[in-house]
Length: 213
Image (cartoon, rainbow, N blue to C red; front, side, top):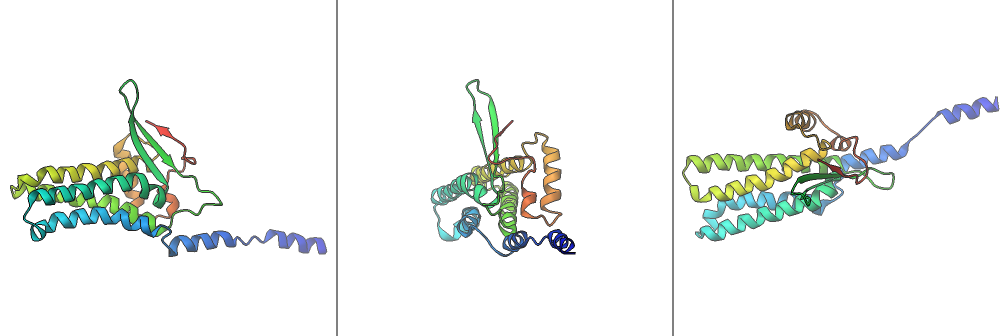
């Protein structure tokens, strides 16, 4: 009888750790400073571009200010916020033969390291997607209104932010080279589904494992 009681007790598994981790993911932003700067530079660049005629009559001053904000955004998203908010990193390098290689890293979740929260992941991907779309709208509005002096700046905004978007999508999908499959899978997970933080990493990626393509 005593043995039966022991067996019944052993069959009951209460994993409070997983419940606490799930509640943490849903309730908090773990990296508030990184989350702030993930949006600050890119939103500031858009606001400055739209309102520059109100702030200053100097075309050169506005041009340089927006370009600096775009450059700061590109660097911070590529090197800092991606690592902290979703555990992803990417870069491109040229080897001695002149060939281009994409290198991807993904942080492996461990018991000692709390995963990114849902709020952080959503903010990261929404900011990464929406802002390049806004610059594309600026491109057509600039083109149709014949404000060609701003065209170079708008193209720079599209190029810098689209480069980060493209790199992180490839990184998330594990370096999949077929961009049509990448885009379809990415949209299905990010836009049409309510994804958990784990969904924002390719399952096959290991801790800081490098994938070259």
